Length: 85
Image 1: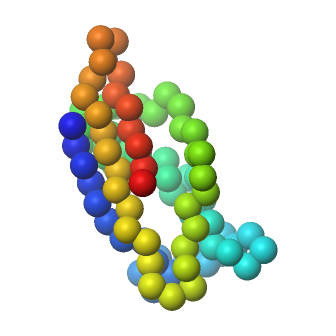
Image 2: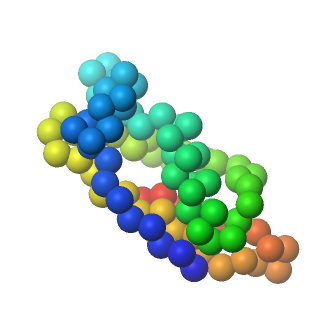
């Protein structure tokens, strides 16, 4: 298992402000894929088979959000579950 942590905010990732929907900044799916790919690189997973976004990741106007990306152990087929919280 691999667990990566970080923080996203408009102060450090200003380009995210371009992804506002009705005034709320939503982290784009492409950015989530990048987080998953990076974590997969650390955990020995070479590709993303599927990405399901259950709840959009939004950013506050001030401050930021802590992000955790967890790569689970390989199953019998070698696949690994990755979760973003």
